[in-house]
Length: 243
Image (cartoon, rainbow, N blue to C red; front, side):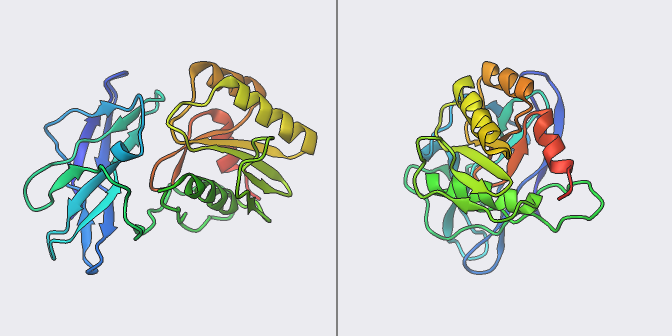
């Protein structure tokens, strides 16, 4: 059974109830990450690929696989890393190598409101920069956008994902997105007369958030399970708008 712990944000002191994600082992048994209820959550200030994975041993067969570090988004905008136990049956250790090929079972995103309920969102696990583009494309399709295509390489325009009614920039780097990328994406959307959406793994600097709010540009943060989280009101409106 998955652990449930209370996570307190060190920035705003808000408490959140967090349930450990459950992933499928190759033997078919579910593996729940063993959370530490006695340790404090850590604010994620700088994300690296190696440091974003945790190695967990299946208590049923002993197989060890690597899964995304459990993270939680606070309403104040802080991304929190939830501590994981490092001994006992569910042994967890930091990953220092590239993660293996098998992808975990998709976890559903929160249901969006609207006249026609959407099916559960099925994310794409992010292990490479291209996976981040695929995850963003999958989310836009889930929102109801059609004809979504993913660029193999990021063009000079910075548009990584494109459809007849939407374009998106996807930043897979470990540095927060700046205001220039936000403005460039907004201008591309304006020129093409389509909606523009931005996705990032490491979040956004304060000026980029402020500029996106002025331009009504939706901003999302992607976690390594491939599930986007809205970080401004424009993104929340995009989720609520039926298509």
